[in-house]
Image (cartoon, rainbow over all chains, first blue to last red; front, side):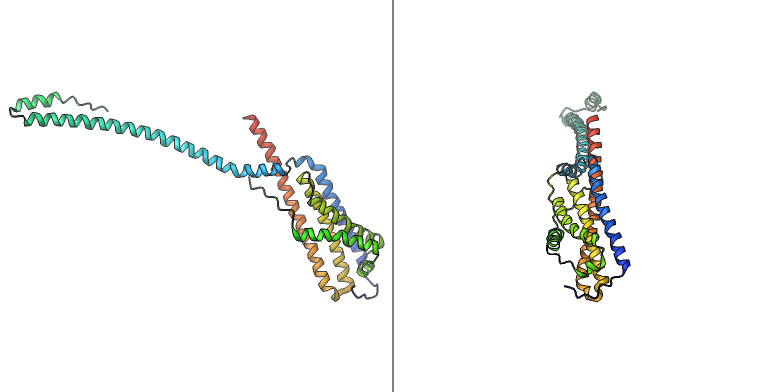
Length: 131
Length: 149
């Protein structure tokens, strides 16, 4: 036990402690009353809280996934376009190679004359230029 | 939208202090050995209220911590208990310091720590409750939007 000076506690202390105690007690009561009255505001119980937390975690991921999906889609369509262009270019290369072969054959043939070569060249001038 | 995080309610210091409070209160009530500082510093009704408060605070606080129902209700009970506990320990601190002065340094500092911790915890719970309210608001808004689309 704490050694005791005579019970000469100043009177203001009694008043102060009374006021303090009453204030604190009423604050506590008000707090619990507020929570009980506003129970409707807290619709989330523990499980809902978890769900909500999970939602906040998942949401950024979801937006990211949507972004990535869009990106993948555009990349895929671009790839299609490019592949088509490559196909066309391959076709052109094949045609050109064939033309070149024909010309070479015409030039190299033992009975090659300038006229024959010119005919071959003028025949193959209808190159498909549009693709 | 921030992250919703409710602090754990099983905090050893808090639980230990809350568990000890009713034991102390019951012993004081049964054995009648009120501390001199309390006897001299408070009027008799406040003394009795102080002792009953100890019991109520401890029981209520543990009840709030272990509340099986809604999280918000448990937090509210705990909030009230913690505020009361802060008040009670603060009253005791003041009484000790004023009545016993320098001799009460050790006891008063620990009890003051209890006061500070209780009020701290009360502030935490208040913040958590506000977050909880916001979260449930978000949740209702979200479900309403989800139903609309």
